Length: 542
Ligand code: S1T
Image (cartoon, rainbow, N blue to C red):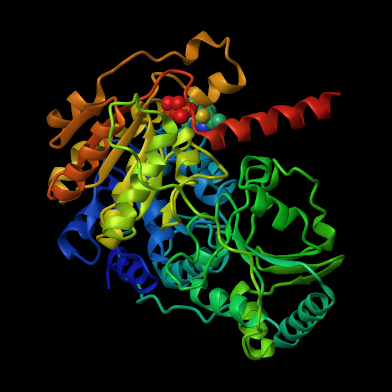
């Protein structure tokens, strides 16, 4: 079988559903194989960062692999920020980057797209991937592909596959998926026993869930475990939307001083935090009202389990959850706190639209039409998402790169067929909003809400005197028609509600709603988050 085709079949067998790519001469032969074979559909966007965000979102949604194919140098290095975000947020992304063939690599000339040396690209990607290979030997290619794709799945982090231009047509063996990396069941059992012993001694245990629960497809099992243990469940900021497709009542999202008081008290007043799949990042735990002592927590993430000062290495999260379920017995009778209520019933009046109205209007739509997936950028739109009735969501909650919103919504719909609502600020929309122009050719029709406060509000909130944060009014709704969609600009609560009704009732084209907000207006959650960070920094300085 031709090496390029073996790679395509292996990607599909390991859970890829599509490829996002922009070709270049170093990878054109592979693009021909992609398009001729039809093994995986190809989505070409306008700028490589968008490919990375879209593929990252596809991986998060389909719990499989996200795949990007780009040319050598200029293409691959354009992707670095999006891959870094996938690495930081544990997203299984396969980067296929073209590279020079043997002859051109030793032609004695520096090549177009080359940086310092021919393998600079490879070296740069080593910092943002968990495994790498250059497929320069057809005899070892099948084994190399199998190894790298297993790493991608098992560590749920990006990998690099460099594809020299002259190799894709060479014959190689079909790729046989490797067995999972072995672990010790005895160690899993010991960790689960100690975990349950700590739980039996606790008076106010809480289960905190985060991204790896999704990445390793464990939401149903974790919901069952929570029921068996009879403990309240909260998500982290990054884990927002987790378990909402199970029938387990998640109590809310922990946001420290920026969140709902009863959730903050539940977590910060707990004598045992059981943390499944959590990234101990500042966005998840940085605005704690009371410093959290993780040495008294039970932490399972990054393929290891920490219980107090005990470390159990090489324990897959799935193996631990399985062992806990086996040992937890029947559901424990539990009187659990009431889950947080989310605001509904936005008045349809001529009152000036405020950032706090957006979530209320969307909660009304969720109640009327059922849950829909959210793709959020970073900015106040992400804090708006925290005020929604929990619904499946993708967003750069920790690495926090702007530009994620629109492409991730396109990737979400491409891989799942579900129509997302994309939440994006005007600043981030300026970075990647243009990709909406591809909806027409791929039959995508997201609803896009641009929170147009005409500023980089999250910058202004921390440094009001920053004049560079003033963006002006770009009239984004008028752009929509040019890009093949529908656009409406709304300034009152009634206009927003009506525009959302029309958008949900319109299929077959993207619908952009430009929500005009006063500069300086932000959601209550962002206000509390910013005040919390400022108070924290003041304490650190003081
Ligand atoms: N560049 C990139 C690629 N990502 C970033 N996160 C930043 C810069 C810094 C940054 C933020 S939030 C923000 C910037 C520039 C402003 C976002 O503006 P907009 O999209 O209009 O949203 P809003 O007005 O709601 O803030 C984070 C803090 O690092």
